[in-house]
Length: 102
Image (cartoon, rainbow, N blue to C red; front, side):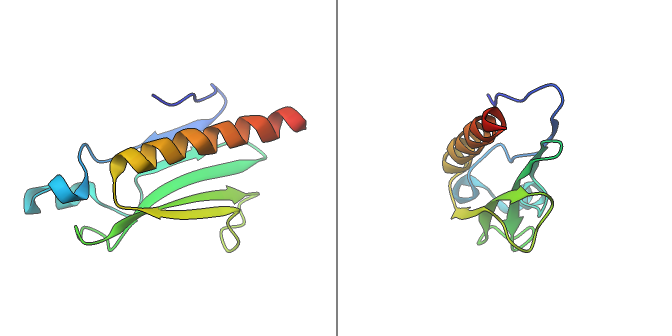
């Protein structure tokens, strides 16, 4: 699904459904910490859910450089899981291109 290099750390707990398809029994899937790729000495690609365990929230997707969480390089908000997955693939491509330029 995602092209993760072997020296990258990956944590993946993306929910198995869109929030619009979820029921009250599924709220535990929608937490602050859903997905993260840490690329040593470069970037962190991070996906979380705002309004922890509230289906009215949204996905927040960040690219962080050098652990500077106060100033993300990119920040996007989505409601659909497919949009998040597409964004992750784009973020991974961005990271690959940046690392090739080093």
